[in-house]
Length: 189
View: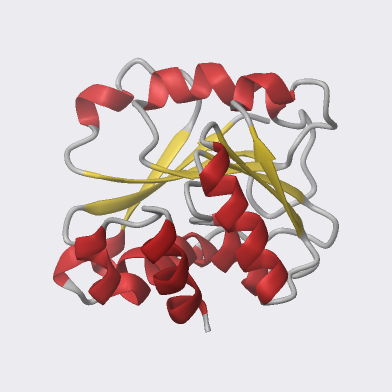
């Protein structure tokens, strides 16, 4: 159901790279769901997707975890329009789209987890989201950031002081797309 919705919206608004549409499930849905290998939110958990674009990884995760509350944030209003339309079309009750920057969400209750896909370099990203994470956790994994990114991350992660765990997606997903993709967890609580 997601594929046809995104094709329809992509014809109106460039939500997903046109070259990725043929590999939509692998490059967007499956890539997003890779977080579920480790992320297991409790009922009522608050999860913020920063730089969600058209709703990735937030919408696939919201489908998988219907008892968690998802806020999908992007600075481009037309992308949040797509998030809202897709969420409504498939009946997601646990998604709220927010047009704005993550740094502007400090007036909201804190989030248990921040999720994102390659928005920027990790040190800058952590500066944006650190104030948004709840300082106590009730999950099997510490509150913090789950981040999908590709390439050699050693230099980028060197300045990060918080505990980081990195998983190679090539070890769990058998598609050439995932050869250099990694899932990072940065513990912030």
